[in-house]
Image 1 (spheres, rainbow, N blue to C red):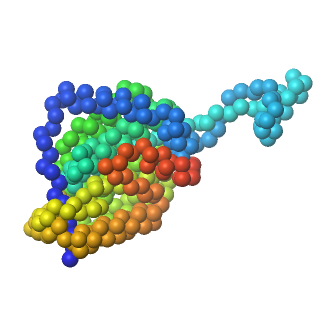
Image 2 (image 1 turned 180 degrees about the vertical axis):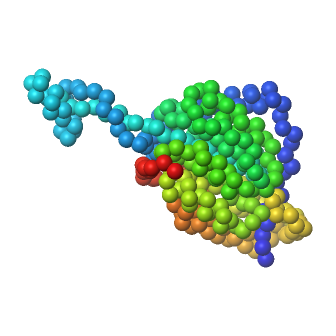
Length: 318
């Protein structure tokens, strides 16, 4: 028997524009407070710039790396000098946010789409601290909105405002391939692409067309496939008889007794196997899979991911 995930709550009417602005401002302030020290350092270490620029020569101090000795300055000034370098960042962060119908599921108090918008805020704030450029592509059954990459606080706020507004109205199917095509046009020489989605759609699961598009992007850029999970997709609540409906695959609702321990065990096993299969498929493309539960704070999971991920520098522009 094929299990379908619980039906998402019908989204409430989108907040008024002024309320969306207030929410975006609150999200920006919260992200700035949370993205400090450990998080920002983990981001900068996981996704390094494209090289090192010479900054200055300074007198040698005990403990300095002798491989950085500036022999010309040492000979000229008759005392040891070392070269000091600074990282040439040049990193472009491109966020792909899924706001399709299945992203409207929110059994933990927030929908997957809004959880994705919060992750966008954290990543954009971290990138802003290291003067990296940030861009956004919002998609459902097509590309719903694009904010081309740029830098600066005003631009980051535009990214957050767009993400929050679109996350409040999840609808439609999932068409990741058009979003990936737009991403390939926007990325630069050294780019980090975060795909925030549940990777569910009306076609095969996972869709081979998605995987091919992700693989094409991952060959030249750092791609992180962040799968957003609602608790109800991982563990079936013991609520007794229930009806289940797929938000993106039309069909008759499925009735099942969620009070049955046997049915809940089968649901749990199927959900776990789906996550494992998705992780294997994404790893096969060259992307880094990351699973984020909407019921858990995202910062600890992101910091753990950044720390265990070896920093890589991709060369060559598409």
